[in-house]
Length: 131
Ligand code: FEO
Image (tube, rainbow, N blue to C red; front, side, top):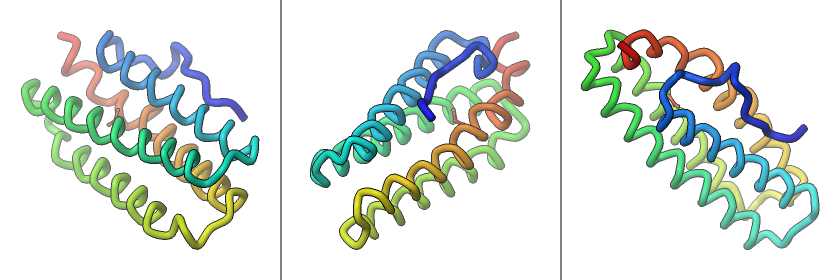
């Protein structure tokens, strides 16, 4: 599967949509690197890029939700923290995994967690930030 952003993911906010599009590009780059059997240092660097950008995006989104007085802000923030913790766990176990196992685990995390998050959880703040 390739990760491609589409209009169904839009939260109707140009900046956030650009962030999400970039996350999709990073997921796609990671999956290609794992599938193509790139060396582990390259794959790890790609995973670090995902983590850093995700952290940047979450921080931005949280400031925006807080400023908009979004009532689900704290619950949403907790989900962000849980995702970063999952990514940290993956990074901690990185050395013990081969590229195939790593690819599978990351793929699961990205599809089950982050895509679901963008597709459903992020959609809920849409009416509050686009007044
Ligand atoms: Fe776009 Fe709540 O992450």
